[in-house]
Amino acid sequence: MGKDIDFRDNIVKRNKIPILIYVPEWIQLFSASRSRSMQKIITGLEELIARDKECDSELRNLEKRKKTVMNKILYLSKDINENNDKEALPKMEQAEKEILEINTKIQKLLKELETMPNQINDMNTRLLKETIKKAYELIKESRSDAERSQEQINDFRQKLSELIQSKVDAEERLNKLYSFIHGMIGAAEMESLDESFLP
Image 1 (tube, one colour):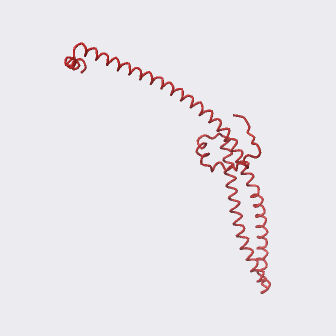
Image 2: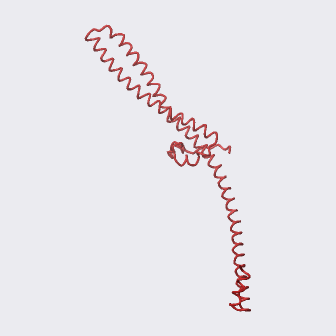
Image 3: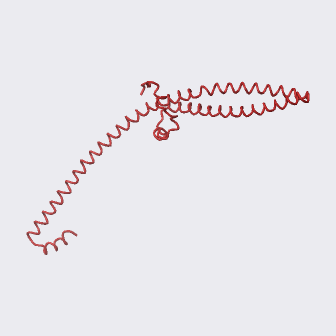
């Protein structure tokens, strides 16, 4: 199905469509029947989500490290100012250099984290479009399966109806035959004939 899907009025945001790969119904319906393009998008989406978590974790670690280094700087500057400790100066420079590096990394991470929700949303929207294409393929397939099954049911109904009629006819003939013989020779004679003819 090569049709492209365009949603009206930003339907994804308006309908608050969740991350599909976490939706139980989506998993149930599409885990066994994904197109190649769906699989590619899923991989991309998983990578983005993993990177988002990674950035969060890196950011927390950098904030912790920054706090530690800032405390170190406070301690060193007190040592330099109050005790005129010359050996503390290179340590101080090193700590200040590390703070600059940490701030640069934090800025980079914040910038990356800022773009993440949009990237994840775009990838999720792409997955939704591919999912809809696949869903319509499966709808067509299911519809023709249902029609085929209905035809078979109709055949079985017809056969069943014929079998029921055949059984009714056989029982009716059976009763008429018994009734005929009974009328001709009576019950007692008929019992002994039953034993010899119907073992």
